[in-house]
Image (cartoon, rainbow, N blue to C red):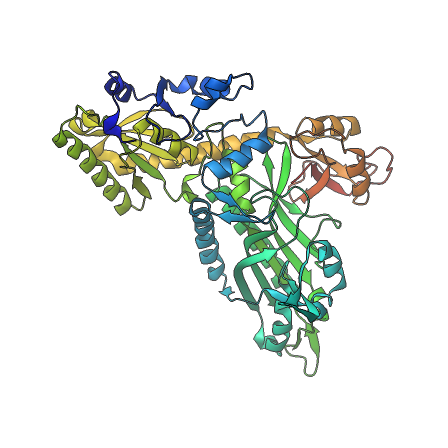
Length: 565
């Protein structure tokens, strides 16, 4: 359906109104019988809620376009998420359950994360390499604790054509056992250390329960760093440097505040001496989620794989290398979606948006002269060129087979941080109208200050997203020493900071499991120890007991508990 074929006497007024224009079609946007409605931004939520009501009659349902979401986030976060990642063109489902196609809109987010992380780790002397995705059974089984923990998730190749393999070959769930035989060859002397290797790759962990795009999938993309040092102190220093890098990814790029801490013994990486982590919070579900981890492996793997070196100043004496591994995955995209998305769809933080500003020509009606139309389109092109020259990722949507209102909804659904509207009046007045994705507020700005104002609007949007997410996590972390409050606040979608003995995690999880589901599509599993925060809310005093009343053991530290993905 071309815009010029529309014959509505009120269309010109509709364009001048500049409210939220909803174009609804029978089936898809190519129908010749659209219904056009216009509402103000404050009424938009009411419209969305009305559209999702189950008591709608069949005739009304047929009029609603498939463009928008059909569910309210707070009513059903699980279904809302499923609709956002598909309708915002982030993923496509694959015919193998738990595996997903990352479409360009989502992959571009990963590329921005990758560019940032890659530059930062190279400043630390880390080099990129690539190792095979296949692991021999003998190599995988050399670290017994490691393989025991990963065993349920390991996918095995057992046949080649019609022939059984002599020995099954695993597809890497992580690459310690792939890399470290080579480390053993490369390290002979203390002069060969440190080794700092990173690889960008995919891994396979055969999750069977409740797979969902980005958050829990059987194959995902990540970076995994693997380093080896002469001294333990050097390795431990790097663990925290990398953890802070991951904090910067979440907070500076994705506008998501995180809690930094150390995993409990039960939750640490298999084979590690200890694991540090960043934990985020999903307000819609009240669940915590692991953002990224940095592990100190000690000498556990170097002993298994014989990564030894001749010691400095000690002739004839050898020692095992101290090692770390650390990783960040595409899960970050799912966390970003859940934290910032709203009832209109995805909301992209400006630092990771492949399109930071979308320009939409408005007021191009059948009655508009060709000269005026050309002037509007020329202004849009000039605006894009001006933004691009200033390093702002900008795109002009000049498609003629969609109305301006349809484009508003489409780009809003995809989460573009800033929409710019340029119409005939704007051209005459040397201005444009900017609309931030998170507020919907319309702001008229003079063309002579375009770059400065757009940069300010993008920065302000980032700060609003971060501050809102910060308020959400801070207001939903409850500090308590009382078990009844622990359970009650957990059931009200909070995270809990409570004194913990370090030993009865399984019992706490069992006693806080609920038969009913607290989030549609996900069972109400019990509280899990997310981390031991570096920043403790209070000092543990002598006589302070574990929060579980039947435990009776001295508490060691406050631990962050919560339901998790």
